[in-house]
Image (cartoon, rainbow over all chains, first blue to last red; front, side, top):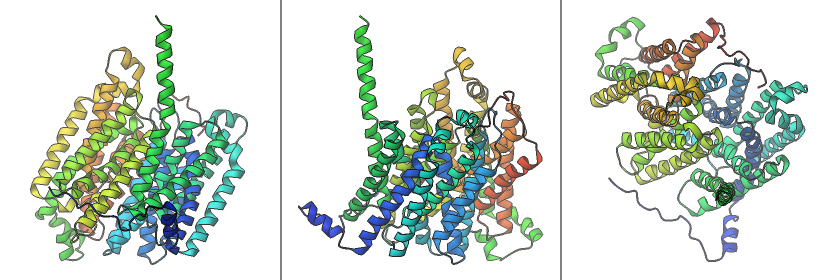
Amino acid sequence: MSVPPILVPVVGLSANPLTDLRNLLSYPFMVNAFRAGAAIAVLASAVGWFMVLRRQSFVGHTIAVVGFPGAAGATLVGLSAFGGYFTFCFLAAVLIAVVPTTTGRAFSDENAVTGTVQALLLGFGFLFASLYGGNLNGIDALLFGNFLGISNGEVVILAVICVVTVAAIAVLWEPLLFASIDPAMAAARGVPVRGLGAAFLLLLGLAAAGASQMTGALLVFALLVMPAATVQQLTSRPALGLWMTLALAVVVTWAGLAVSYYSPYPIGFWITTIAFAGYLTSHLPGLVRQRSRRRRHRQQRP
Amino acid sequence: MSAPGALASGHLLAVAGLGGLFSQPFMQHAFVAGSGIALASGLAGYFLVLRSQVFTGDALSHVAFTGAMAALAFGADLRLGLFVGTVGVALLIGLLGPRGRADDVVIGNVFAWILGLGVLFLGVYTTSRATSNSTGGIGVLFGSIFGLSDDQALVALGLGVMLGAALVILARPLLFITVDPDVAGARGVPIRLLGLVFLALLGGTAGEATQAIGALLLLGLLTAPAATALHSTARPFAGLALSGGLALVEMWAGLVLSYLVPDLPPSFCIMVMAAGGYAAARLVVPARRDRTTSGSDAR
């Protein structure tokens, strides 16, 4: 059993955090990474907030992860990975929205359809990758992302996608919230619940595809689920919760970028770890409250 | 990742190709291992879909990647990391929720982080072994059923049969706690314990299937045959048998297709067969409603 060598940090930290920050931002590629990171954090976590509220993590994960076959296919035919992410994320969203699911069964039909769609599309991803041959490092970037190669043009595209998605959520805010919290009541009041569900899946596709460019297909899901789940532990007020989610996502992404700059370990690891630490911390107030309630309960019974 | 033997002889005619199917050792190994893997996946998948725990299966497939990468990074046996990872996380997910079932947000957070760990191990593995590139990672993600040795194939078959047998033995109580947990609980059936045992068996199946079809694709083998069976029949034991049988047939058909068309990787062919079976069942068999037809069309 050979233990991997403990890798030394690529860049040393100085004693002064301000100097470090200035160092960090002295490289254009880092500035672009911070800009693009903010855009995808807002994009993914805004949609992710609804995903967590609607308990659609599995569907969200599926739509996110099938960006990989799209990007692999686009690379195979010589197009940009960007277009591939969009095509397949949308394709999965449409497939899951369109295939009729029979309700009233003992098991969840949507689950079965989603799992099959995911596996089939990922199978195509492997086919494209193996037809492409050779360059396996390229596949790694599609799966796990590339934070440091973001061009100015891509930052603009990501910002536009971010604005479009947030605007769509702002427009759909009230009916989507209603349909997510109480679908039966919303349907009774004439809210187009099914249509909103389908529109939301398309938004998920848009957000996942945009974020995949940077995070890779496998790690988008972390940005979708983690900040939103953390905040929903802390507050149940919708508007406040959404704002907190956006802020948390940006903080987590920037912290991950900064830490990974000074560490030899990949950014995906840092972002997920920081976000998971936040998620665990968010359970503390609830646990404390539960504990004190139990104690009070015990004191009341002699 | 296409068949080495078939690749050497180029694109064969279908008939000629089929003639040599079983004379190739790599093909024999693939059939031996694939049968065990398909049997376990088909049977475990039936309960997975019936219990609406597909997302747990999805999570375990990604955990398999992390477990295998951890083993590779620390120079341990890949299978050790796989099984410790999948069975361990399966039990963790079971313990995090009431009645042995965790909320999907909890599952999502846990596995997103575990996947982040997998990226860390992948990074350590690729940088610490200067000679190798990331082939190890890709093999774990997408499997290599044509690359199994004699021993590996036999171990996979044995494990698959054992997992399948355990699932068949537990089928009756598992169905009971799935279909009517309240009555099962009142009758003294240990719901939580059985749920955990099922998750452990599922974890074992996930680890087993990763070797052949890869961490990212094993979900299809768990879900598609089971969904096909559940769509086609409401009778539980018939459905269970159908799910296991379909998984076997789809596995074999996928292997043969990949052998005939060497450009198509085996994992892809197996997925196409499994998904094709489900699509065909949905088109041919009219949608059936279960006993409780009171569901709302809200979602």
